[in-house]
Length: 419
Image 1 (tube, one colour):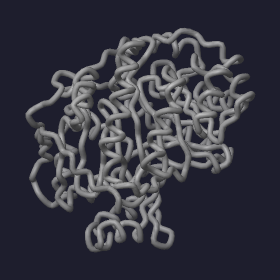
Image 2 (cartoon, rainbow, N blue to C red; image 1 turned 45 degrees about the vertical axis):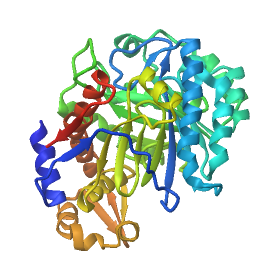
Image 3 (cartoon, rainbow, N blue to C red; image 1 turned 90 degrees about the horizontal axis):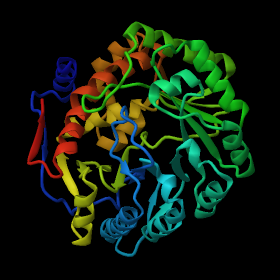
Image 4 (tube, helix red, strand yellow; image 1 turned 180 degrees about the vertical axis):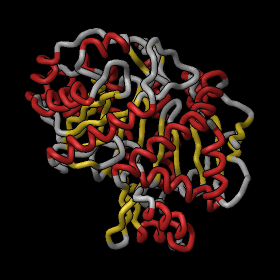
């Protein structure tokens, strides 16, 4: 499985040099002149642990949560001192998890601390479990400045929820609360490529969400990480491909706007994506930071994270310092996630033209009907989005799975070499 990603990595970076992630703290985060910078905050707490979920999470505990929030505020201060009294404009702030709404009463103080150092231009988003969608909790988030919410529904189908180990939810109450406390974006997360799922059942889920107040949805494929557990069979690749094509075709017929590989909005005016950012700063355990010259990830160990912050030391677990070509590969991957790649933006970021670096590859992609071109912008076709997904699947299992699997076991690994 790693052969595909290894070959493509070597081809695109023009070297067989592996990605070498090194241990050690890195307090030098120069981001004041970084354009298109987003912010992400990880809240690891959950009421119960879903066996299929690969993200960093622990069971909610009030005392642990209080210590974690204190540590999180300390990290924001530690990173924010780079601003030296001058606020940095950023695109957005997203809270992910875990279940961030479990600490809804603390979200306001966290946002207030962020606002000490940053000016957020495109809004604040929070992920919610359906159980958190009460009028009281939603109002608390809105009063704190949250403008976008993403609800981890996964499916409205009882048989799918049973497969995922989810209890039934009273969605009439959920959507009643959402109507009473409106947000700019109300996104619903679905998982597809699960047993018994059909295009018809997925379309029913989308229609139900849009009919009850949602204006955006994400349709993520199920990915089987090696360190998670599942109690169901995976769908065959040909069936996943058929489902993706059917969903895209349905959305096109309805006039829905596709704003990334997996996300669609009802009118094109609502967006929710914590991933399509050129650069971002991450706060909290397991949070990642991507800047022009480096990628770093915080420890997955909640207690180790708290200890580091109590000592006012960065909780960096691993860091990769990019070669120019390695950064270009990261840029291409995450930019194409948004379905588009601008030649102008690429040149502004790297001071080199896209044609001079990847002219042959883009010409080949166009010939294979993976992309179309309009002016200076390439856009993925439906075929291209499928093969992006296919590559992302291999990338995830060859790269992210290795990293997260190691970090689940070791708070601060000595190194990680991914060939």
